[in-house]
Length: 91
Image 1: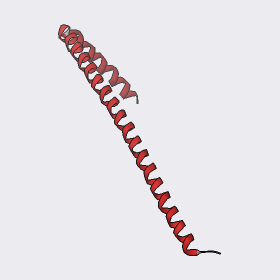
Image 2 (image 1 turned 90 degrees about the vertical axis):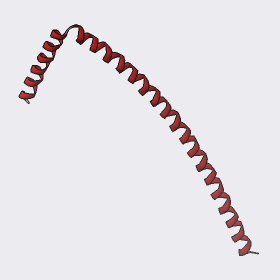
Image 3 (image 1 turned 180 degrees about the vertical axis):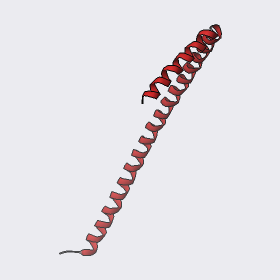
Image 4 (image 1 turned 180 degrees about the horizontal axis):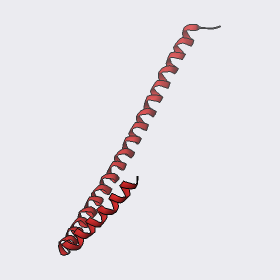
């Protein structure tokens, strides 16, 4: 009535099937995650490139402004230094 060898073989076959299914599901999840990570990395690279270009443009404008008005720039820097000094002195 009860064949332990047959049951053992069935359990082994079931174990192999479940292992194969879990392995396949894990590989698919890994590939999906990898694709999403690569897409995110591409978006971050593009954003950093755009940010770098914007900062470079702003730097050029600031340098031009300072070169056009050196005395005003120096006075502004001095005033900012005094304000920061007073603020740090209070704390």
